[in-house]
Amino acid sequence: MIFYVAFDDTDTLDCGRGTGKLARWFADELPAGCKQLMVVRQQLLHAPEIPMTSHNSSLCCIIETPDATYGQELINRGIAHLKKHFFEGSDPGFCVAKQTDKLDSIIDFGIRCTHAKTSQKEALNLAKHIHLSGHGGTNDGIIGALAAVGLTHYGESGRIVDYADLRELPQWVTTKDLRQRNIFPMSVNRHAEFIPDNHSIDTLGSLRPHLWGKRLTVPLMATGTDTWQVIADKKNYDNPQ
Image 1 (cartoon, rainbow, N blue to C red):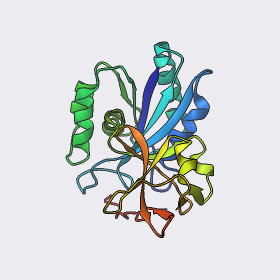
Image 2 (image 1 turned 90 degrees about the horizontal axis):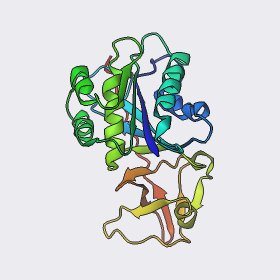
Image 3 (image 1 turned 90 degrees about the vertical axis):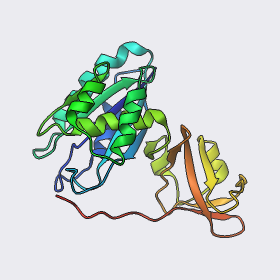
Image 4 (image 1 turned 120 degrees about the horizontal axis):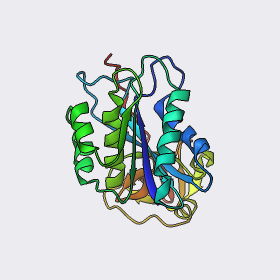
């Protein structure tokens, strides 16, 4: 059984770690027989009217369990994980859902969170059939946590921040290396050509696939006849708080 376990607003500007690390660390808290398959970062609306630490992103862990009975244990361990790493000034939210839950309305909510302001009340009304809870401060993190579940289930957005040995890969890899890991290279050149297995990719030391079409995809730009590079641009935001 696949579960989505999402965290949002668990940090402060000076706490020394972001929600991404907290989500990745959750792999160490799982019950025996469970596996954290990947962690997906979802980007939500960045605007002056949205309270946030820096970028307004939320994180969703995709976790494989032996069966559906592990839901409550994931909830218990996730809440304990939040309490263990809580910082005053944060507004943590936590969401857990099964892949088989009815999530259509939560997908719609997640999509709206990428371009419009939503509310805790709306999030709680939509999440009556799954677990959604706040764990400090204003509890505003429940909005992003629910959005992360919806968007990750939809599978058309998000950046993979942890998966298999992703963080141990060298700067240069081949497209075959990626395909063997079920990571699919995609040309963003005008003609969108197929990239052969023996071509080389400069990851710039930070390969972070995108979640597109419910699969891990790496958009690449050609830098030579048989060499490619990941997209390097990183948007910088001014902290609105």
